[in-house]
Image 1: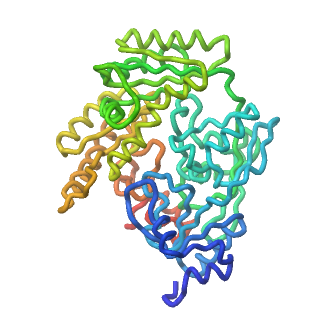
Image 2 (image 1 turned 180 degrees about the vertical axis):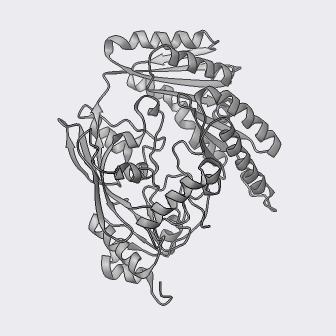
Image 3 (image 1 turned 135 degrees about the vertical axis):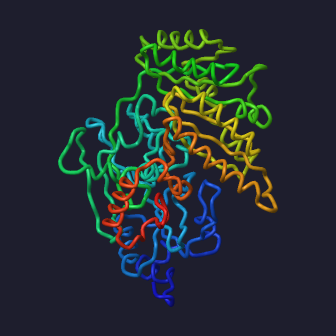
Length: 465
């Protein structure tokens, strides 16, 4: 872009002053996300309210050559919404319309800024269900979920975002608009462009409308909280539950360091010797729920449960979930410089992964805390750095070395570098450890074909070289 061009003024001429933010406070806010990376302040922020305005921004970017970083609610943990190269942040936060809910066809059409939890609430009131439930569902948006193919606890039974996206309206890097997908459950005409765009982390286009597949609201639910002495016992219980023939909605594991944080800073108490919590969520027909709950409870008892609590009442179930939901906010308050690593291992290797993690923690002198979607092996590992930054930054170097060793460990156990948070800016240097050179080269060609000027969300997923 020509050096003399005032980016904010250029955008205001085409979109109006109300759609452009350029004050210092806004630039600082949009220069960060929920990760501890940055800050990377942009030169301007655009908050469009229509697909036409999104298209106008990207046409200008293509003409003048400035980078554009799409952003949903900024809840990502891998720096995917950070404007690493400056330029413009394009936030879809004002695109919040639920445009259609077709109760007969089980389809919803929404804009990308719709908050996931808000959509779920609206659907529940109509007896409909949208299963993906990332931990930040109260604040994260559908557009961000699509960009990262978000999952959550219920992925064990229902799958991740990709399984519920029927179609997308997308603005491509040159400002042109693409409609992909369909409204039908089946459809195999041409390449699966929708599948390509879901999980592409905003590097191929900006989503402006999402057509979602819905299912009926489950008839009855129950929550079982079991307390174990060790994560090994909890892992054995997970295996027994899954071998019982029933598929829980969610199986969430909380490790001993996380329990300790809740003891110290939260309002939750557990019996002496509590080394792991296993939260089992069930949804079934009314007549089957009691039988399934009993089966899961017995499976936990058989491997040495210390204590069990369960309920089928909504308020009591939420109270049981409250300990799991409180861990991450409590950790963030206690360790504001914490880094969260999202990795996934085969379910049968969770105990091995946590044992190796203990070794790494001792070696690098960085404590950890782990929350796991235990049914599918997805581990969210907090690297708990001190509140104050080391004057010589030796803690930062130790943490980066530990991250690298953690990724090697996960891959050696047959796992993957990211279960649901994406690669973003934080993990791109590790990409070649999991994917072959041929796979990376092909993906780079796809990126270059769709975004030949590399203006859309640069320095994400791939390294520059």
